[in-house]
Amino acid sequence: MFIILVYDVNEKRVNKVLKTCRKYLNWVQNSVLEGDISDANLKKLKIELSHIINKKEDSVIFYLLRTTKYSKREIMGLEKGGENMFI
Image (cartoon, rainbow, N blue to C red; front, side, top):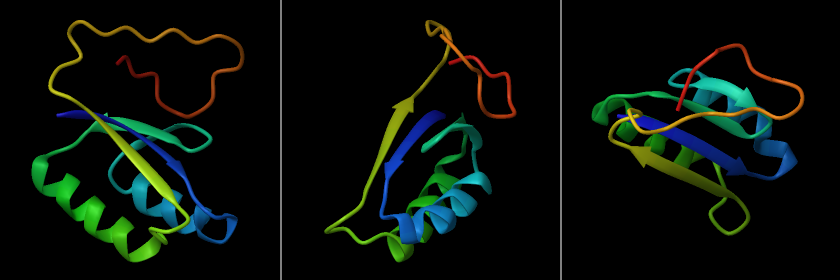
């Protein structure tokens, strides 16, 4: 499946969250990652993040897409991240 992950976490945990997410996904821009991921790896990612974030302060949102067939990505302004991926 293809996912878009967006996070808003305390500054103290940003680096740990980003490092963990980059093991599974491609960095797009500040606090946004995307990529294809298996169900098993998505479960691993969620478990790892649950050990890092503070659920009373932080937020992580997963947008789950079964297919990218009908999706399109448009960028306005500076393109960040290292991957040229379409969603």
